[in-house]
Amino acid sequence: MPKGFINIELKGFKEVENYYRSLNKNSKAAMSAEVRDMANEVKNSMQVDAPVDVARLKNSITANVQDLSVTFETKTVYAPYMEFGTKKRVNVPSWVGGYASQ
Image (cartoon, rainbow, N blue to C red; front, side, top):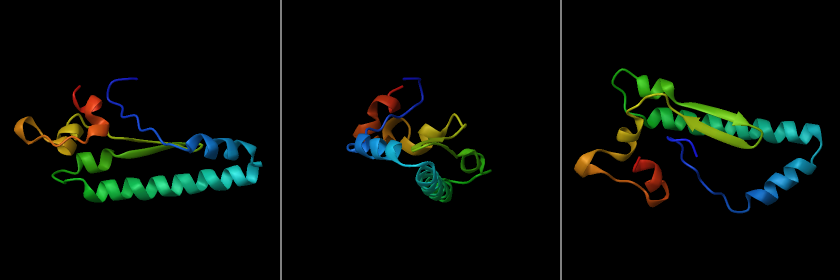
């Protein structure tokens, strides 16, 4: 996995993916639109919660949607420090420990 990515495993997603592949084009388009709408809601929530000085971090948060897959990114190098802390004040959830240790 490329450096700087967090991988989250979703249980039961394979079944949803198989169901998605069995649908007709109109249903697939509707599901993709729903995923895109939900991704935008999450992105907007992330931007609202982002600390603001000159809004560089807030404005760099993006949601990239492809079929049923969503990738959230930020282009700022200091985003992990804002999320997890620095030095003595580090609070890293166990599910992202590998990423944070980079």
